Image 1 (cartoon, rainbow, N blue to C red):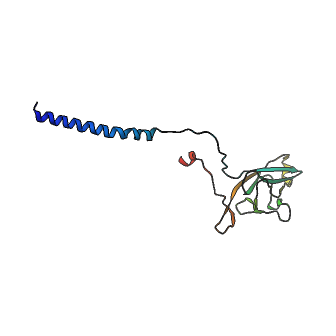
Image 2: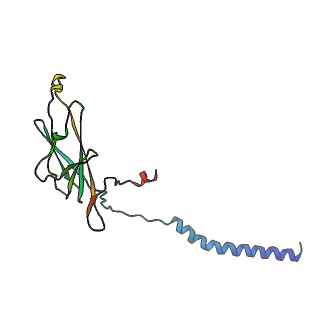
Length: 179
């Protein structure tokens, strides 16, 4: 081997060694970035939205419905009442009690409580009067169900400070959002 080839090999080897040392020292910092972690302890309470509970009582053929805000924030509530087709429930048989009851039936079939419900407060009573019809007596029906579905949504505010309810608002977890 000639002296020139030996010199080139040694130069290439030294250059390679210099590159390895240069990148090797920065590689440690790079690996530290990708492998560093920390642990933590503790918990934080997370309120995802308002909570409400339905309170029902029955007095003869009248079901009395109230909704309580059991959450920690103000909310709006609504209720929908379902009954079997044999009941023959009419519009006039679902009646809000009291002169300023705040209950309003909308075209979508839901009863909306138009006042803001503060934490711990109850709505005014919404009564469902069940009229026993001749058809029910002829069919010898002695029991039936009146199902009440209730929902709540947080109070939102427009720019001018006017409160409103967004009944399409939903809270999804990260798992649901990713799928």
